[in-house]
Length: 461
Image 1 (cartoon, rainbow, N blue to C red):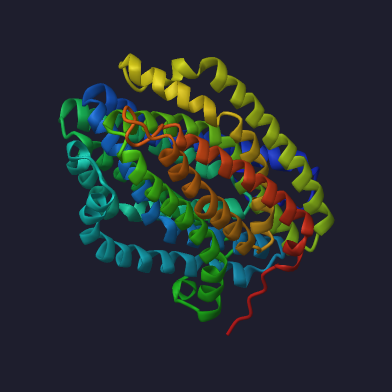
Image 2: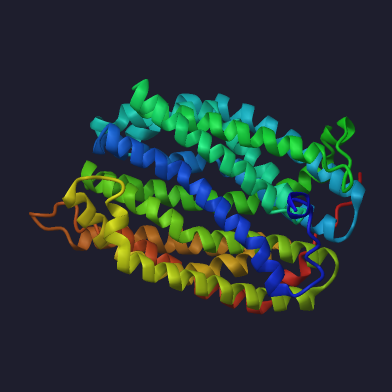
């Protein structure tokens, strides 16, 4: 049974909605485990250290996401190429795609550590990070950066495995890593009393283990591709295609992270308590977004394999069915947030005022998850087909041209002597507006159909 579940799946045959659902479920569970990394960090920090430490971990989030954009891009390019070549049954090009992805990732890890390490604290100062939390935030980011290879390789190797149609194996490895992370979190913080640094170290170790397990799994999949030294040697055409496909996806994440950093500067002006409330919201938001991101990744693999096989009618049918399933999941989650949100907030802090503020702000975002279901599903289809530019431009419009001006505009217009920075709700209102606009634009561009002409063909040079 385990062998059958962990084998690559051909998504070009069978009922589309069943394929998509069965492929998505392990990823939803896996994303729950992924979110538990951050959630357990927040709970342990909030309960054992305090609200300022919780704010330190939260303020590190946008910058950490920015550091990961290179690997998000590589992962996106590798997943798209893997799924299309697997769908086309092209063993040689599939082998070069996987080998070159591993090599490019190693180069990027070294580059990022050398360039980003000296810049962490100056950037935190530039972002008006409060004095009470800047040391903890800087320490968390430095440890995460030094151990970034674990997170990078897990994302890229698990993306390749999913591109082959196996969403079960990355789930198992992530569950193992999550258990390790929870145990080490409690040990480093509650027993050794390492503070925020202990949380970062626990996560780095757990991520390294999950990436090693993924590498071992790939090394055993010789039935589908060749895992030899010659495929690790950089080959111009494949590196170029990985980058050209992944760059827009990485740029999309960079745009979102940049907007978050700009907005974080505004968030920091509301003080440590609002920062802590924002951390709680982001943790609950992470769970609420899981079905959307999972369906988006599933649609990328589904579309990639079927585009590789030339089955465009099947892609369109699956896109419709997958999007409606994502909407149904998001509607259920929205109802849960509205009904049980206050209880969820209480898991992170014992401060009643902080719980009340977090729940009030979270309700603003609740309906937006339905809009994100549309955006993620249809963007996944376009990316799987090779069109990674359109989602990038949509992200640019909704975050830079919409979210940031709305956040700062509301803040400015609501300033009073009692509220010198304005109303803090500006952060959540701006995010909701960007989500709704994103869904509208994504639907329009999907219906235009230009993504159908973006299939990737790599010629060996």
